[in-house]
Structure formats: structure tokens, C-alpha cells
Amino acid sequence: MPDPLDEVGQYVFEYPDSALNVLDSLPRSLLDSGEKKAKYALMYSIASDITGERPMQDSLVSIAYNYYKKYGSDRDRLEAYYFMGRIYGNAGNENMAMSCFVRAEYYMDGSESPEFDGRLYYAKARLYEDGFGYRDAIKNYDLAAQSYLRAGDAEHYAESCVRAARSCFSMGDKEKAREFLSRIDTYWDDIRDSDKVRYFRLLVRMDEDISLDDVLKAVDEQIEDTGTLEAGNLLSIADIYLQSGYVDSAMTWLNRYSVMNSDFRRNPTFWLRLSSVYDSLGQAENALSAYRRHVVLKDSTYMDKLQENVRLVEKRFDEQVNIYRARIVWTWVFVALAVTVAVAIFLIFRFRRKFWRQSRRAEHLEGLYRSVSDEKEALSGMVKNSVLIDEPTRKVLENRLSVLDELLTVRLLDRDRYSPEKASEMIESIALDKDAYLNSLGLMFSVRHPAVADRFRSLQLSTWEIGYCSLYCMGYKGKDIGNILSSSRYYKINSVIRKKFGIGPKDTNIDIYLRKLMSDIESEDSERRD
Image 1 (cartoon, rainbow, N blue to C red):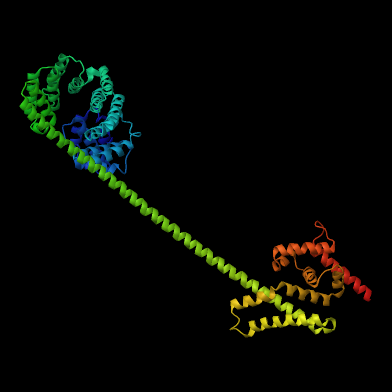
Image 2 (image 1 turned 90 degrees about the horizontal axis):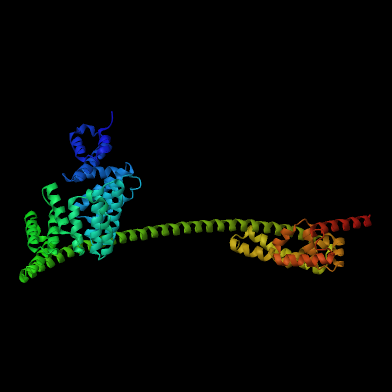
């Protein structure tokens, strides 16, 4: 069974009266979901707006608005925001009305409803015009006219053009006003009589040559069609008669306006027309009194509009300030979080780096201890073999042994002196005293491998250089020796040693050469002894 609300939606724009009758007759039991209640409220609001016979109900519009701002198609959201804007506009809240209209405009592309687009642009234009924003009013009246033209709605097309022309005239741009009015000529037979009266009135105000008979014909046609005239058009007709020189007729129409409109005393336009009529009749005092009344009311109306605009500007400024402040707060929050994260990362990195350095330092110190212990053991053996060591060499070795003994004794027995800092200073001052260390190695190597040492001395190598070469002979790699000496010193010494041995830059590695040379010399020495 088809949904009756969907059926109403298919003809609500063409037959709004029938749509209202059907909606009134629907049982409330059919509205058993939020979607159906929202659709019913929207259809009812559309039909009421088109017929103009029933005022839009705030409660119904709110139901549609609250639902469709979250759900529904683009067209549903367009219509819901539009009607909510109309409600705000009727309540005098122009700022919220414009906000709803702007939100509705966002969903135009998906609405596929040029007629409703025209209604939205027209509503925006009225707000701009009431706030003296004529440029924006003209722009939106023009968009409304184009939308109505696409929808084939000549009546509302003409109304939008006339109002756009009036805004142009208010800005002093008569040429553009004439351009908008010229668009109406093609659709003259389809235009409502009330718009024809507005058309003629605007031409009169622009000092255009028009036929009074055409004006009166339009007035008579409106009276014949509707049985009456709109109150606003009564002032237009009075103005037309006045501009045409029919002062008595102008006064007659002003009197008719005062009878039809109980609030005429608060309309500054009425008093301006009356002042002009009195002036044409030669009643200067009455003309001055009416004009003063016009000025007071106009200034009051202008000030009300100005104050409202000021309030809107202040409210928009406050909203922008609040947004700016919120952005600043969030910016500082993000900055604080970023700084906190950066500090945390820095501290973690620093802690890990410190821990890594301490671990590496501990490993380095342990390696130095092992080196010192091995050196002590080797030197002790050399001292015991006193037959092979001369007195100067013995003193060097004994001095070195005493230093090594002190370090190892402190480490094992004197814990008060053996703090990590002191241990580090002591062991590095001893183990990293490279000249003394290499001299000791050179002496030790000379005792253990005298034939090799003699060959080295024959090539003009010093005891220190013999100690350096002994590191290679003992199996150390260039990388290990580079860790003992600084890189720049290592490369310089390496170059000097290679030259003394006659090894070219591109020849074999020095460690391979020295170990082979040592093996050959000791083999020759062994054979000679045998």
C-alpha cells in the first residue's frame, strides 16, 4: 500500500489546497515513526506557505527541522532549514533566520527543485533589503528570478524582478533598475495585477513617461480579480496620481489607505505622500507637519534597523571572537601536548643514551682491566726472566708493574677509594698512557722475540714502534689498534711503519705482512740454532 505522505509530496506544490485537506484528514495513528512525523510536518508547512491561508506552526516546523537536520535527503534538509528560517524571520530574529537560509543553500545542488530554490533566494533577499543591504538583496532577487524562470513560475519571476529593480533604485542605479523591469515585458499577461501596480509605481518614481490609463487599468483589473487592493498598493496608486498631477485623486487613495490600514500612523511613507499632497494643495503648514512626522518615523525606523544591524554585527563579532578564542585555547593545548611529548621523548632518549653510555663504559673498563691484568702477568714473567733483561729495561718494567699492582689492589681491597669515578680516572690514566704502554710492549716483545726485535731495529724502528708492531704480531686488527690510538695518529704511524718495511700503499695489509715476517724470522732462527 503506497504511503499517503509520499503521494501528497508529489502534488503539494501544484495543489497545496488539496494537500492541506488530505493532511488534515489523515489519522494520527499513521504517524508512527519519527520519519513520518517529520514528513507530515514538512508537507503541512509547504502547503500552508504556498496557500498563505494558514500561518506556519512553529511546533510542526520544529519537528521537521530537528529530524531532517540529521536525516533525510538534500531536498528534505533544504526545505526544513528554509521553513525554520521563516519561523525565525517572523519572530524578528534575522540573524538566526539568515543562518538557517545559508545552511539550506548548502543543500541546493541535491534538491532538484528550482521553485524552492527561488523561495530560498527570495527570502534571503528580503532579509538583506530590510537591513539596507541592497547589493546582496539584488544578487539574491536575481538568483530567485532565474530559479522561478526555470520552474516556469512567471508570477514569482516578475515579483523578484520588480523587487530587484526597487533595490537598484534605492541604490541610485536607475539603469540597472530599468534592466530588471524590462525583463517583465515578455511575461506581462502572466503577471499578477499587484505586481503591475508596483511596476508602474516604480516607473513613476524613476520619472519615466507612462500612461495613466495603463496604470488605472491595472488597478481596475486587480479590484475586479480580488475585490480589493493590497494596502501597500494604495500608497503606490496615490503616488502615481500625485506624480501625474491628479492631487485630489491622490488624497482619495491616501484616505482609503488610512481606512484599510489601522496602523497607518506609524508608516513614514504615508506621511511623506500626505506631505506632498498638502504641498501641491498649497497647505504649507499641514505639509510641514506631515513631513516632520515622516522624518521622526523614518529616523525611528532607521534607528531600529541600525540598532538591529549593530546587534547582529556585535553578535557575529562575539561569535568570531569566541571561535578565535577557542582556536587559541586548542592551539595552546596542542602546543602543550606537543611540548610534553617532545620533552618525554627527549628524556627517554637521554636516559637510554646515558644508560647505553654507562653500559659501554662499563664494558670498556672491564676490557681495560683485562688488558691491564694480562699486561701485569706478561711483565711479571719478563721480570722473573732477569737474565734476558738489562737494568734500564728492568726499571721500566718494575715501574710499570708497580702502577698496575696499585690499580688492581685498589679494585680488589680498597672499596672506599674504588668509586666508579676514581676507578675510571685511574684505569684510563694507566691503561691509556699509550707511550708507556707501547714502550712496555716493545720491551716485552724484544725479550720474548729477540731475533724479530733485532730485525725491526735494523730497519730503524724504535722501542715504541716495536711495541706498536707487536700488537699486529699478537693478532690485533687495525681496527683494534685504531681504538687504542686516535684515528689521525693511527694512520700517520701506519704510514711511517709501512715505509720503513718497504710496503707500498697498494701492497698487502701490514698485519698479514708482520705476522708472516715474524714467522719467517723465528723459523730461520730456530734452524740456525739446530
